[in-house]
Length: 97
Image 1 (cartoon, rainbow, N blue to C red):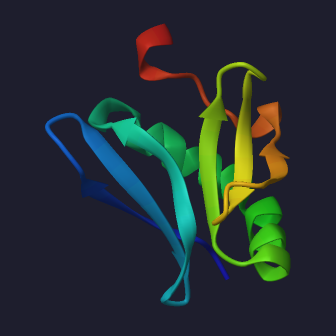
Image 2: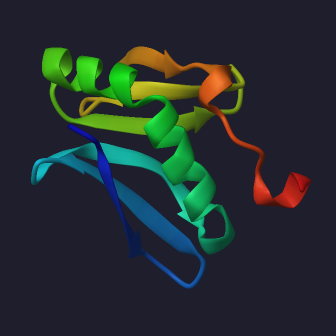
């Protein structure tokens, strides 16, 4: 069982990254510019076990960057934080290469 990520354009620069497993939508990973889509897909794969566990327990997920806390926050659909993507799963942003 692996997470499938589909990028959908939502403007001139941004893309929404939909996560699904076996055809079931499990949520959205951080919005991304085209140059960072592959990096964020790799982050989802690296954090797959955590994301699936949280989805099974809480339902649909939304992952967003929390600039104040400097973390990638995993939230329920109602915005309540239920987890954090570990830094070990993060990949280098395109602007830092």
